[in-house]
Length: 276
Image (cartoon, rainbow, N blue to C red):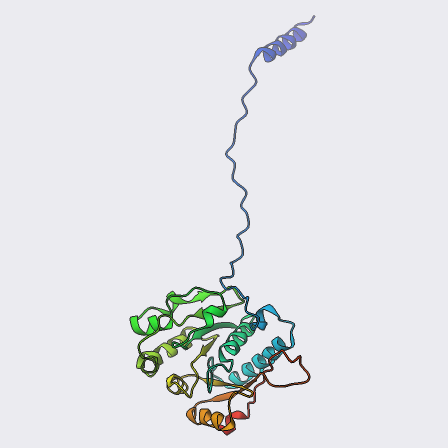
């Protein structure tokens, strides 16, 4: 055996008796899972919120028409008229449902974000329709100086945020006619210049809030339910809103043979501004 072969054999024997090098355990990083989608705070279970739970229904289509008309009306001038008030003559005509469906329809579009304000401090209902628990809201902003941003609720429904009513104050009428209310409307309008602000209010005939608020907002949407109010009652409501920018009428639960009889029917009449 040559010296070279002996050297190779000795080296192989040494390697056989030596301990194998221990594997170095490198620290491992846990694989990062993708961030979960933003949960929807709102629970859209109410059957009347058709813009969310029945988007292909004829009624949802009527709301989309309403939305399109309103967008054109408030965008015709240089200034974006983004503060809208929704009211009716009497309770039970569907103003809150109209406010919700209109807000949802707007918020589902790519171009629009919406702040829905529950201005019915006497009988707030928007948070109930959305299945949201809300303790603080509009009244806390007015009475205790709470910042609007601290009480807004992102619903998770499109780009829709809710400002709940908050605790019921002693006299909502005086609160709505106060300088604080006017300042708050102005603050919301200019803090969110690219956002629609829809305010659901109490009915106009039995309560005074709408009469104080109407001149402060950019436009008023008037809800009338067929068979509930008379023409004289409607005229009384219109007279109470003189001086405000009446955008149109939503004629609710109209008899229409083109739709199923269990559906509501909505439309706006821009010409209503001429009769107000």
